[in-house]
Structures are given as structure tokens and as C-alpha cells.
Image 1 (cartoon, rainbow, N blue to C red):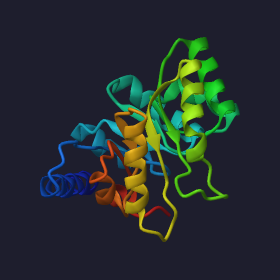
Image 2 (image 1 turned 120 degrees about the horizontal axis):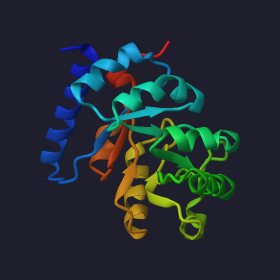
Image 3 (image 1 turned 180 degrees about the vertical axis):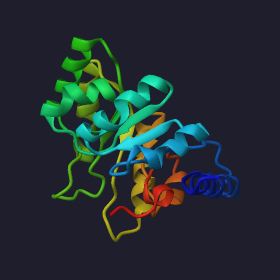
Length: 219
């Protein structure tokens, strides 16, 4: 078994034992965050049958995934990085999910592009759960009106996403996100990375964004 596949299987086993221990029914999907890694490193996972992959940059995703997706139509590609409005037309074409919608301007641009090419993608609203000035995302106090706005322009918002503050206990923020997601009747929740995915798992995350624990360190 290729080492990336073994890493993925090990993570799945850890998650499953955690789910059993905490008596949680919801099994999260793992987004293998393949940003900066060449397709040769990713192919063993595709051949293993893994479906969900994450990229940070639109152009890198277009270059890497256009051909692969044609021959593997079941692959779901997730944009987990910040999306500039001038890249929306390329993003909507290649991605199936966008996890980082953080402004009305971006939401409207995605909506317009979806109409133009007749393709509906799934959207996560990025929440600035730690209220950090340097971090993008919708403030909790503005979330309800932003959700309404997205609904008015016909975006398919499936859930919320967060990146908790560094060097703090992410579990506290994951619990807040779990409650926010429930309050807004969303079924999907995007949170948890290599360092804290088990904490996200016990707070009902449905998508975990795991990179280095699968692919190794980035250079």
C-alpha cells in the first residue's frame, strides 16, 4: 500500500475509534488537501477510490485537475483557500464545493457565474469564529443576514466553515461552530485540519480538511 493511502487509512481508523468512543453517528468525509503536491503524489489516493480533494489556488487546480476530473467524474474538488472575485469564473467551472465564501460581493459573483454557465455548486460560508481582524470570514453577528442574502441570490449554501485562531484550543471554537450550524439548520460543517481533526470530529464536522498528515510536509 502506498504511504499516502496508508496515512489516509490510519486517519480513518483513528476517526472511527473516536466516533465509537464518543458515540457519534456522523462519519465525516476527509478532504485530502493536495495543494502544492504534484498529481503523481495524488494518484495513489485516486486509485484507492478516494473522492474528495482540496486545493487553495484556482490556477493550480485548473492545471492539475482538469484532465483528471474528465476521466474520474466522481471526484469532488473543494476550494478551501481564499477566492478572489477575478478568479470566480475559473473556480465555478472546476470546483464542486467552495468553502470560503466571505463577502456579499463574492457571493453575488458566484451566483452570476453559476447562472451564466448553468452549473450549481455547493457553498460553505466562512465564519470568523475567533473575531480576528486579520482573518476573513463573516462575523457571527452578521451571519443571519448574510445567509438570507445568499438564499435570495439562489446560492446552494450547505453549511459553515471556520479556521480557528492559532495557538488556542480549537475545540472551544468547534463547539461554537457546531451550535451555529444547528441554529441555522445546516447539515454540513467544514472544520478540522491535520492538528485538530479529532476535536472537529466530536463536534459534528462533516468535512475535515487534512493535508500534511496524508501527504507529508510541504516544502
